[in-house]
Figure 1 (cartoon, one colour):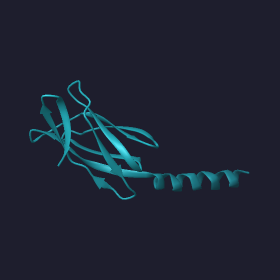
Figure 2 (cartoon, one colour):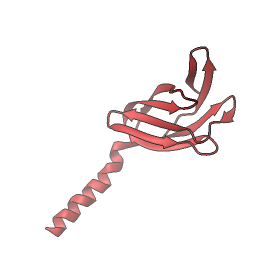
Figure 3 (cartoon, one colour):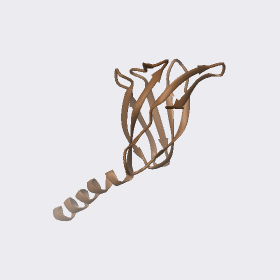
Length: 107
């Protein structure tokens, strides 16, 4: 019984990374990094939360497919659709202020 349990657990651990895609990149506003900003990535498999570092960089493992990247910054929530695949993918964003508030623009 213990051997069967170990085999099942090993199989689960080895297959979990197959369902995740990695996205990474940076967030900037007027050429300056957006540090310590919270963001969510909403995918069909669930939502994933992250925070940028002091240089505005981020890296997060998320579900695969079409997702939405949502930034929580200056009491606003700009978002943009992104795609996640098996291989890591870079998304660098600029936070742009406009008459309608903040928007995310891919660099």
